[in-house]
Length: 182
Image (cartoon, rainbow, N blue to C red; front, side, top):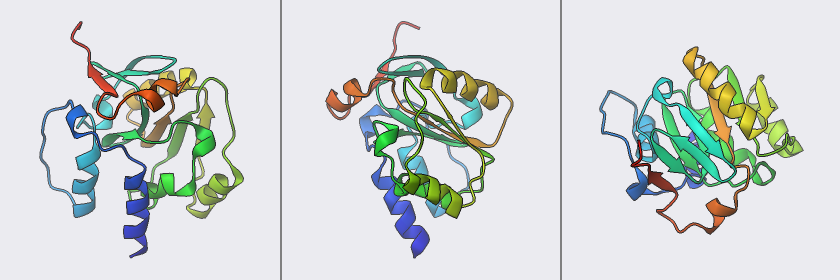
């Protein structure tokens, strides 16, 4: 029951943008929790296939799309994450980390400048025994994500836009735009 509550808390922090799904359908055997996670996986890929191709102050270029939203990327799923900046993070935004297989590292790209987590979030990481948390500027975290991903490392990444104003001002359903110039 506690895991269900935690999972619901995490799911509530995700953006539900069904029109924004841009990947292809894939099917594999998975638990009910994994199927629910897949419903929110915006790129429907494994992490090793995801490459953050670029970024600007308002968002990221991922899988041939311009994404004007924060991202939470697991080893097997990518999510639009409805948290515009590190200052607004709460422990429940990371609740999924308690019910997935353990990760070796949480990489966080926190915007233009490195900012610490609140004591409440740091205490939560201690509670769940998340020992390796790397906080970087978003610019540095994008490069680190791609390197670690190419190495096949078991990690999760949270990327915040440098300037979340576009994320906050863009109408729901318009945060992911397929780039047709490729």
